[in-house]
Every structure is written in structure tokens, then in C-alpha cells.
Image (tube, rainbow, N blue to C red; front, side, top):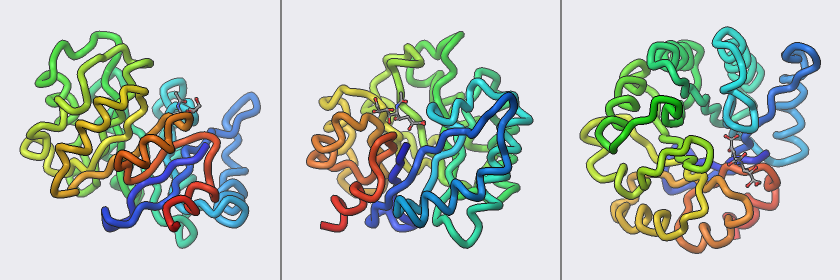
Length: 232
Ligand SMILES: CC(=O)N[C@@H]([C@@H](O)[C@H](O)[C@H](O)CO)[C@@H](O)CC(=O)C(=O)O
């Protein structure tokens, strides 16, 4: 459950942890502070991705997602470098509400998955959805969470990147959770000015992605060892 994002500067990749949401019958908010300390002290991880796939964000209610985000931001203050909140939802309004909330509580970025029930049928429709969500948090770096195996949306990331910053000025990069390394390589190739972050999300292919130019990673099984890879 580890995620790496670039640092405040895109040139400086950092290890991040995509965190689970602790639950018994209900969400166990009280252990999130300990979880932060564990990640920082035991795992050498100072960046987290909250309410994503591993955090089961899409299975939580909106009020639960808000509360989980608040806990991570609050408990991570002065300990974590970046807390990125996944705010994707099937409802545009809910996604916007979560994006605005992430900005209000002081998160460092937001990420959005494509709506996957009534699916965007082309790139422009998808970008319009993302743009509306990003506009709800106009000061927060925005990541598109590309995970076609779960969304069923096959629009290639490379196609999406083309001209995206004209539509979404806060666009910071991709969380690329797909095994299509050709698509990934074409994204990297398109990013000649290195303005975007490419956070790779399939642990099993991370080494290949690093060779190809991933600037960070979001993963389940990597942590301190991953930061070592980058620092070497
Ligand atoms: C589908 C999924 O859960 N993918 C994981 C991977 O880390 C995955 O667990 C790993 O590659 C093992 O298959 C992450 O990319 C997901 C993630 O970052 C998230 O919590 O949003």
C-alpha cells in the first residue's frame, strides 16, 4: 500500500502510500494517527493517497469519505509531505463536493477516476467531466486516475494527455494503473517538458515503468525500498 508522487517540485519523486481505510464494523478513525506514524517512522513514507482503490473510497458514503480525508490531513499535519485525496464518484456533484472539501481541509492534491457506469464515450466527454471536478478545487493539483481494468474505460492515457492543460489548468499528471506499457511510454514521450507527474500504479511492473520514466508510484507492496530505488 504504497504510493509515490513527485515532490512539490516535479523533479523530485517521493514515496507515497496509498492507504487502506481502517475498519471494524464502522471505519476506525481513531487509528489513523497511529497509521501516519507507522508510515513515516517504520516505512519511510511521507506521502499518502487517500480514499483510492485500496482505501475503498468508492464503497464509502460521502460523509465517510469526507471524514477519512479530514483525519488524514489533520493527523498528517507536520508529519506527511503530501496528502492526495481521491474524489472520483459517479455523480459529478458529489465529486465536486469532495474536491471542494479537499481544498477546504488543506489537502495537497486531488485525483479523479473516470465515471464508470454511464461511461464517457470519448476523450472530450471524459475531459469535460474531469474539468468540472477540477474547477471545484481550482488551487489544488489535479491527477487523473487511469485504471481501465476497473472502470472499463479504454480511452488511452496518451490520447487524454494531448492538450489537457488547456482544459484543466491544474492538471498535474496521471496515476497510471494499467499494464499497457506502450501507452505509458507514449505518455512519457509526450511529456518532453517534464511538466507532468507519472505515478505508476501496478506494482508488478514498477521496475519497467521506472526505466521508462515514471516519476513516482502508487503501490501496495513497496515503501522504503522504493525510495531507495529513486535515491540511488
Ligand atoms: C487495483 C489496485 O488495487 N491497484 C493497486 C496496486 O498497488 C495493486 O494492489 C498491486 O499492483 C498488486 O496487484 C494500486 O494501484 C491502487 C491504488 O493505488 C489505490 O489505492 O488507488
